[in-house]
Amino acid sequence: MAEADKKFLFEKDRVSHALMVMALPAIASQLITLIYNLADTWFVGRTNNPYMVAACSLVLPVFMLTIVVSNVFGVGGGTLIARLIGAGEDEEASRVSETCMWMAIIAGAVFSILCFFVMTPFLTLLGASDKIIGYARQYMFFVVVLGGVPVVFNNTASSMLRSIGLSSKASFGLSMGGVLNIILDPVFMFMILPDGKQVMGAAIATMLSNIVASIYFMVTYLKACNNTILRFRPTGKHLTAKSFASIFDVGIPAAVGLLLFDLCNIVINRLSASYGDIELAAIGIVLKAERLPLNIGIGICLGMVPLIAYSYSSGDIERMDEIFRFARIVGLLIGITSVLMYYIMAPVIMQSFIHNPETVHYGTLFLRARCIATPLMFLCFSMFHFTQAIGRGKESFFLAVIRQMVFNIPILFLFNALFGVMGIVWTQAVADFFVVIVSYVLYARIRKQEGWKPAM
Image (cartoon, rainbow, N blue to C red; front, top):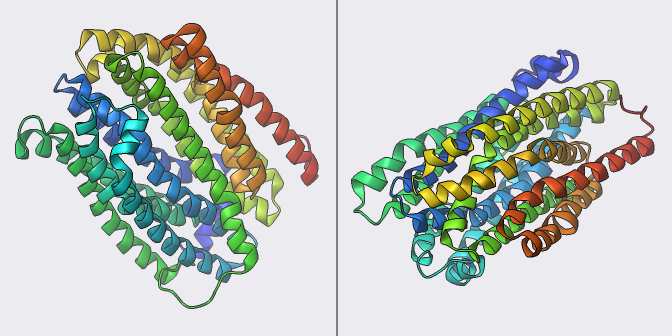
């Protein structure tokens, strides 16, 4: 993106258009990423084997840990780059991009190696039964152990590209990997590998698609290094102590937020497994099916973050407020629409994944309960991303911890004890109702501390 185009997008463009330019590619990549995550479950569901479906669902939280690793450097570094550009510190922004990319690659490699040595006990801890553990090991080995570094690299590189306004290029790489995964799934599951190895086939397809996406991101990132502030080749020039700390001030809360979200899903899987493999499979499908509006909301948040960070750092608080307000309105409308859609279409959605009548029955009940939380979850996500954009790491960390450790997880155990399996799926709506209240009290406090006018 040319310097003049970047300045216009971040400073002068209509807020609705600027957010569209940044958010639509992010939404597209989020949806395609969702589709390829759903594709594994959908294709495995064609076997009508609930144990295979449960295994894929069980490994999802482990796979999400690779995103946790990338969030430290992608979110922490990406938001800092946008703020530095807004403040006119382009050279420091270049050093941030270089440092974050290399730290992400090293951290991803360490995580993958660690997962190889603790795979079986970790899956057992997550609730894998004797009927599931073999399938879960297959899936985890290819997707996380062998495919972990490409996932970390892809997500970090996409955050770097998005931070300088190249949202379309960032999103294309993630989307390309998703589309390739959808194509490769049936090839490996039903054509190359023998019957009974469908889970392994889905895992190999996911790993290969992420590797191909990594090649794209490497080429795109190196090209961007020629005409933007991004940098990859080490120069020997070190970050300032303030910038280095800022990466982790925002990156660690972003990682912790996703880690705790992941922990919450682990608790859900563990509690659900106590009711049986059928219930675990049903909840696993629901947790993936509900991601449609949530991923759209995350795409909106990813699009608004660089715009808010730039406006905040350049001192244009009025534009920052307008961006945040418009993003929330759009996200809430999508969330409310999704509640109606899921409540009406729940049986059809479940049957599209699996034809096992018992699994469909439980999944319909679960999805209708979980969907109520969708608008509330978007409000939580938007506030979480806003604090990241303005460099408020402590507040971001506070929101992440209070959402999961104070409300979500404790209420999960309480409602499970009181209401059984239905209590598990109703927890999200109740917990996020309280989190939204806390987050807006915190938002008002931030505005007062910054000396901004009260929000409209």
